[in-house]
Image 1 (cartoon, helix red, strand yellow):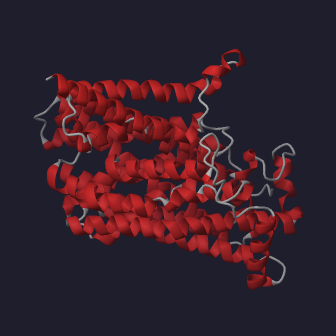
Image 2: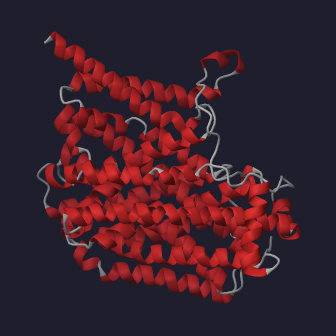
Image 3: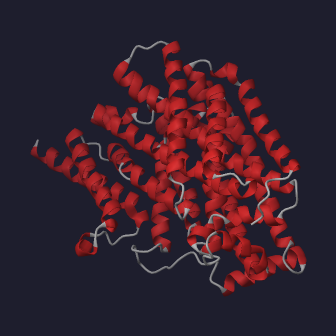
Length: 508
């Protein structure tokens, strides 16, 4: 890989973009000086803007790097995740959006307290905050993977710089700045992805049209278009494992993720909130497909132009060109080695946009959870607006710092997408089950919820830790694929809670 940094024009494009984002936050800062403005924008935003913000949250740097990396090194198995979004969106619009708009406060976890007591709200808060720290860490680490080859910088300073910039503009502008900058970032990201694919295909022998045909043929010959095995196998990353994982994760996102709930409230009406969910879901499916096409096209380029990829292989101690430790480097390598000056800057700005549009959301929603579910719930129920704003801003800074530390700790993982999927499954695995128990099983009370959560935590801990047991204890290992953690954890909490609720009800 080239050892020079970005050209002056590329750096100028990136600098202009970052400056515009910060300027946007400053322009909106007047509306974020009250708690209601900081966390919900006064409930006055159009549905299309909220929808593009949700779409931008989906399109993190995990998508920008992890998805092409997966398609480059393996196949389209992970695309099955995207196919679950329309079903999850339908469920969200039918049940979740009305539930939050009509019957609960701004916090996604107030409902848990009303149903099962304060401990349940605290459990939801802790699970959510851990999930967001893992998310921020994975996204910042993805930024470092991409910008390292382009700038020649080490991962640590990239992570630190990105963390500071995003924390700054989120702190200044609140959720309204988050949503409107997400709109800009979604457009930049989509344009960058299309431009990258056009350059990729045009660089194949024969030009754009013949290049597309070559990608299809090479991909088909090497099994790159596969969605995974259709066999009823839950021990590998089969079609069914990714389908179940995607459905449960996306139900978790739309149903109990604080960042989504806040944006339901930020929309100017229930109809606008429902439309925002559909817009985000129906945009993400084809755009994620576009990133999978980019990954397959990168693989075809490797086969057609092996000399272009030799420096990348040499940089990772001669590992196989499609080894896991190389996968997430594939797209950045192409950006720096094949794209013309100026275009590289736009693609890097798009990558930066992908990271910022996800991190800012996590920062604002995490601060909201800390202020409403911790500070006002436990410490100062009657806190005035000035005290609430101090906590919201302090929490934004604290979560930004902890997320940055998490990213630094992730340096060295082999697959960005795998790491994020594993961590999100662990931390979110129990929360969805508890929430569904409260919504569906009306007779479930505190004993049922407590027993369900206890059983779920034990199962999640066993599935997560047992693969690390020594060979002498191999019989205790979970046979299921790691992505099944959220599925089994959710079903365990719901099933155990429902059974206990029935037993308690029968005895009474």
